[in-house]
Length: 411
Image 1 (spheres, rainbow, N blue to C red):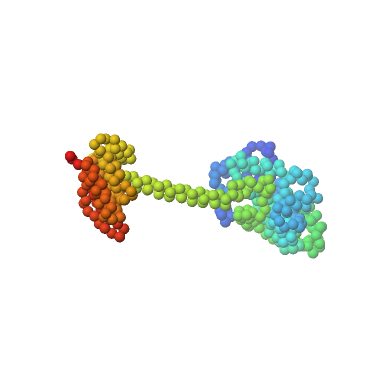
Image 2 (image 1 turned 135 degrees about the vertical axis):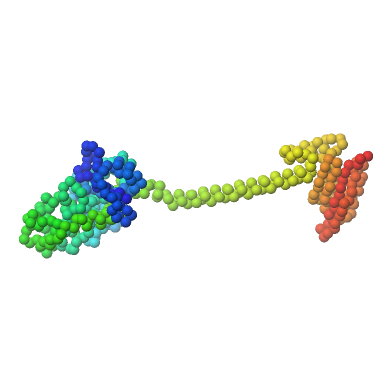
C-alpha cells in the first residue's frame, strides 16, 4: 500500500507539479520504501498498489463532541448541528466526518472545507489513482495518556515547519508549530484544574515555553523516531477508524458500486452456469440421439437397398417406394405394398422385420395362431404374380412368429 502526505497549504492554483512525501508498506504496515515525488511518477512506479492519503493539520480540524444517538448514519447527520457553535463558516461550505467514539462517550469529529475535498479527489483522479481513504494526520497519534496529563512529543513527519503533537485523554490530538506551543499550553493549562496540569515533554525544552510554576513538568527523551512505524500501521488498517471519504465523497474510497450487488450477481452467475450446463447436456443428448437415428437409417438402407449408393437415405427410400408402386412390373415398392396389404388385412399380423430387394422380400411375422398364418399364406398364394415360401415358424405363449420369403413369380 502507498501512503502519501498532502503538502501543507496545497491550493488548486499551486504552481508546478505537486510533489508529496510517500511511504510504501507491506500488508502488515512495515515500511518498505519512502520518497518524495509526484502522483504521476508514483503511478508509473506502483501502478497496482492501493492508495491512501494523509491530510495535514492545517487543512482539517478535529473535535470531540457529545452525540446522544448511536446509529452511524444518525451520528453523521447530527454532527453539523453539534459543531455549529464552534464554527465560523457556513455549514454548506464544510464537510463533516465522524470518527470513533472515545472512552468518555464523546464522538471524534473532523471538519474540512468542501472545496478542498473536491480538489484533493480530482488531484488523485487526474494522476490515475483511486483514493481508498483520506485520513487526518493527527488522528494517527491518538494514543491516550493518563487522565490529567498533557503529552507533548516531536512529530516524526516531514513538514515545512517542525511540528509537535499534543495528546490528552479529554481531547483529540493536536499538531502545531513548535513556536506556537508555549502560548497554546499556557491557555490550555489555565482551563484545567490544578491537579490536571501535568505535562509530559518528550524532546521539547520546557524552559522555552514560559510555563507557570503550577505546571508539573515530566521531561523525557525525543521519541519521534519511534512514532512513525506505529502511525503507518494505523494508516494501513483494513478499516481505518477515521476516514474523511464519507457522504458525497464515499464512492471514492469504498468498494466500487457494483460490489453492493455482489451477492445478487453471484446468484445470477450460478443460475446462468446451471442453465448453460443444462443446455449443454440437452444438446449433447440430442446430438447422440441424432447420430443414433442416422446410424439406424444407414444400417436399414444398407440392408434394404444393398445395390444403391447412399446419398440421402430418406429421399432414396421415398423414391424407391414411389417408383415401385407406379411401375407396372412392381419392384420392391410394389412387392412391399402387396405384402403389407395382405398381412395387415383385418389387423391379423404384425411385421417385425423385413429385408427386401427389388425381386424378393424376407419378412418376420407375428400372428395369434397358425390358423392366421395359413390364412395369410393362402392370400399370398392366391396372387398369381407372387410366390411365398415358409422358412420357419415358432410358437409361444404370445402367438406364432413365422419367417416368410415372398418373391415375384417368373411366369
